[in-house]
Each structure stands twice: as structure tokens, then as C-alpha cells.
Image (tube, rainbow over all chains, first blue to last red; front, top):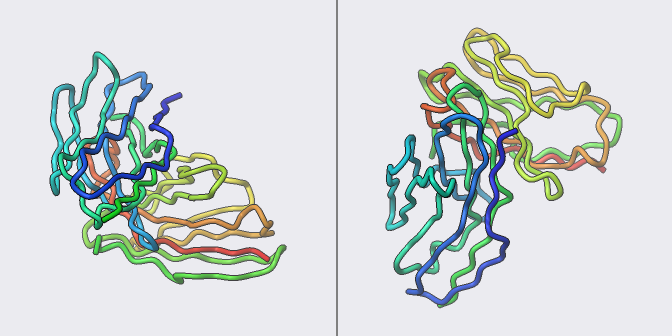
Length: 112
Length: 115
């Protein structure tokens, strides 16, 4: 079945550092790809998405590019802030399916 | 604020009991999804309803059931509760059944603790 694999956490960085969180997927069809963020004590918020190969999703300084050849959707940010501390989930949704398949989540902590 | 509301926010109950979790989707959304987030299983899809009808089932136990009412709100019923059912339960909604094209918007979740 479809699956998503994220880099193991936790990840700890200093403020203004460059961030990469790796995400790879396995899917039989042509999935849409998502990054969701979960701040402490809150629900999941959509951060960005891409619906086809080579699409780039971006929001709040975060970017991810849908790479079909490497089945990846890595999350990047050039300069992280303390307020970016959260758990980040990579997810896919196949066009025929009715559900999101999530990675295990990566906890990110940014120190001032 | 996603526009999806869930009640209650916290629920503490005992093993063997039954509880009902409620979800109101965003205005205009016809699809409702339920997910379970636990430390050992991560985020798992449970079930989806579209305009009152069940459309997809995931890893939902037989002790669990759900329904979507004519006003489009949904309820997740958990019965014969076990310690392992302790988790965060999320509801999400989207405009249609096309999971691959629509974004799912998540509610704040209901934290269930079974003692």
C-alpha cells in the first residue's frame, strides 16, 4: 500500500539556521503531497501542498518540490525562527483514495 | 482556525465504557474524515463520510462506529473502551470526495484518556 517515510527526529537547530526535513513516498498512482504542521497542544494545519510532479508548494518561507523521479517531497526553509518549533508531518493522498497517509512526524525545536 | 470544530476537547473515562466524539465540518464541506493519533501507531485514517454516506474505511476497530447526520455533522462512537484506545482523535473535512485534489482541514482534536 501507499506509505510515507520521514527523517527521524527530533531535530534541534539554532535560530536562522537552514532547515531540511526529508520525506519520501511510495504510491501506486499519482498522489498529491502535503506538509502539515502541529504546534504544541493544537490540531494539524496545512503548511503547503503540491498536486503534480515538479510543482513547488510554498508558505510562510517553507518550500517543498514534488520530485517524481526520486519520489520525494523534502521540506526546506532558509532561516528558521523559534516560532517554527512544532511537529511536521508529510502526507500523501492518492487521487482515487479517500484518505491521507501520514509519515511518522518530525519534531523540530528551534533554540534562540 | 480551520473552521472545523470538535467536542469535547478532553474526555476521561474508564475501561469498558462508551463515548461519543462530535465533529462539525467547515461550512459547505460535504466530506468528513476521522483520524486517530497515538504514540505507537502515529496518525491513522479511521473512516470517511460524504454527504451522509460511508465512503471509505481504514483501520477502524469493530468496537468503533461513526455516522454523518443530515446537517453534515459527524459523530464517532467508541465502545467497550480499552487502555489502548487512549489517543487524540481528529476530524477533518473537505469539499468533496476527491481526496487527492481537495485539501483536508483538521479540527483541534479530542484527547481521549481511558483509565
